[in-house]
Length: 258
Length: 248
Image (cartoon, rainbow over all chains, first blue to last red; front, side, top):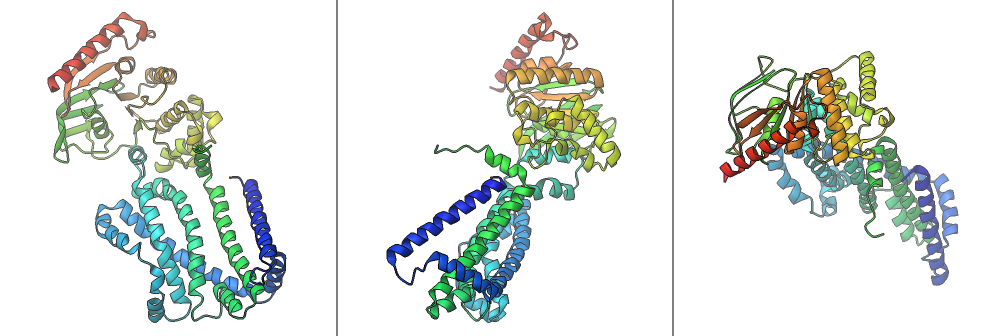
């Protein structure tokens, strides 16, 4: 998908969602579904007030948690994918931990790491790291043997194998995992920010809800959605810019339902 | 060029190659043919220095072969081009790895692109190319490192007949002009006869040399039409039948 078509499809989707929202607002005629235009206008006002600070707090937590998850996930994923030893001893642990509902660990993390940012960041990182480990491991394990054979005959060192084969090969799946992780991390953060904090978009939404200020609540929901969408689009644009070959491969995939 | 003395190879307690002795002359073009699973590819990987034989010795230019040599290039059936690199980047990869100076680097890559008629696709990615073009890029990548030994592992088996014929003809021409030692592993009798000055027939697993044939029609420009080609083709077919019969 080229940048222009990405812009068009995003605007198209936003318009459809807003129209649907407006129709529901008209049909239900209740304060629990406010007018979207009124909400957008309130959102603009709030952004110049303290909403921006809430958004930046959440964004900061997401960026730090995702960075930790990426560093850990890529390292462990590569270890499992490239070494029989680590595959034997680490894979079963990842297999057991992956399906656990890690969100339930929030109280334990708060007890261990305190009520501040640390526990929330660790929770988000803990939830998305497994997705990254599994993605990286699978990408490395599915690499074609021929890539290694021909490059080894050129006299490539281990570092060169990483640089020319292993690292580029994990990037497409890593970007996919990152896109999925963004949605997950925002959801988790929304939950985590309801505890022991006064900053974060999750806190803002719940606080507005408790105050029965539905327009503010909706403005917060729109803000968190736009944050997710913005991050999602940013990842998409980076992928298009730096991984053009992935787009070419996707372009050659046929639609089986047409 | 290459001398293998009584080499054997075991993999997971299975004997893949058994007591195989062979000498390949410098500048020779050798075709290796044999039934599926007879160890042809393993033998090629031994020549590439990618795997070590379980026993026996292997020498390249009178030096024991202990690891891959930078002047050996391997071209496999699946091209092994890196999809994340453009044609130009794929071709100059060996020069990157061999730390060739930037000034020589570009000139050599451009000369190779021109030699193989790939200038028009140099900025494309492998997925944008046809099978024939991809294989031509793989050959260019092998040639850019000015190898003295080129190894082909069923390199043309996934190409259509016309592209295969054209590439085979280009390679034969290349061999005759550069005198690079070439070893072709194939299961196609016609290909072995067209590309090999000498043809080695391997036995079934554990693979060893069953018979070798000198190909008198190799230097004939119309080899495929010659009587010698057809006679040797029948002989090879018969020999392969014998190999299969012995195995049963």
